Length: 112
Image (cartoon, rainbow, N blue to C red):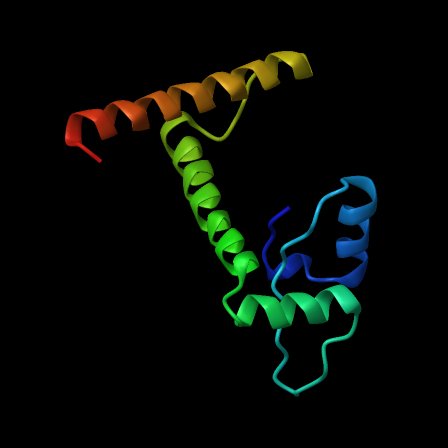
């Protein structure tokens, strides 16, 4: 799971590992007063995301995902209308398919 600094907390790292059986890639927040980062996972993130390891390249994917989400909202709207949750999920999947298809088409036309 990739998240921004706003989710930097030791308990978030532990919950992701325990409940999602995944690794949380969250950069450690920096504070002006020079306090130390506490927590095993937070210290590891601080160390590995500054050294240019594989986790740093994984974190770069977050920017791409944010861009695609923003584009979907901008082009197709932010609100999903529907009474049932299943309908809203189907509409969200459809929007993702339409956006992805458009990107693939543009890539083929322009030659990406």
